[in-house]
Image 1 (cartoon, rainbow over the protein chains, first blue to last red):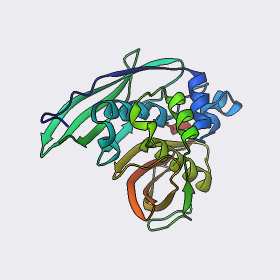
Image 2: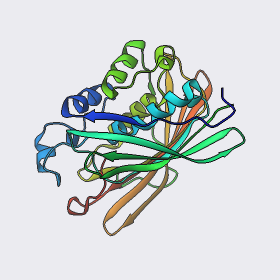
Image 3: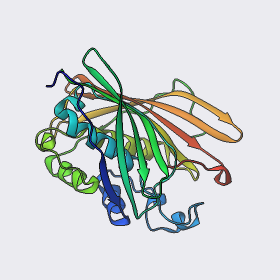
Image 4: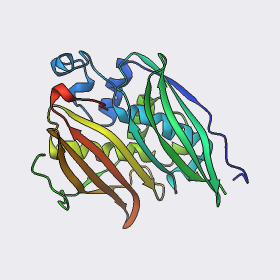
Length: 129
Length: 132
């Protein structure tokens, strides 16, 4: 690959209830908290929230775009969710190079909702040479 | 879930994503990358592993998935079965909230292909904080 750490480009995605429903079936995660359900309506949010793993998927997508197959062969991430993503919401993943040593690039990553709410923070790294 | 303690091991189980499953997953997330024409997105495997975890421990009211970590060690082909091994790294209670960390090991064709840690909080409903 490159001799310099790749730039991890931002990824922006609309997460609406249709996407959440599709993800619930694709990931076999039918937790009613994420679906149009009485449980979601009775929750503290009063409506469904997106799967955290669906938000996290933006991190994986951005790292795959930058590193290709290397992401699944030595990739690492560690994240915490900071706030729920309530559909419909447009989310942007951003990654900033944090360190670059021995051919492994590490990025600070965050997912931000269109209202400025930080939904997820953490780090992601992969080898590039 | 309240009965879980450090060192507990859950029954292992198998997940497998066919090419069709990968297409459905990518359509759901919105991701498009030719890398996944042959390989399975590792996060898709992780998602199924977590789904299996939730099935086995149940989803109590107030359960929050607050943190996640994964190391991906080698690509997994479409249709390659992956064995999921889960154990409890820690379990504690604070202010009425149950905090559990699970460790995950994913094995395929006799090789360790990924490891992970999953942070769960089961909070009293009125104290729920950051869900996922």
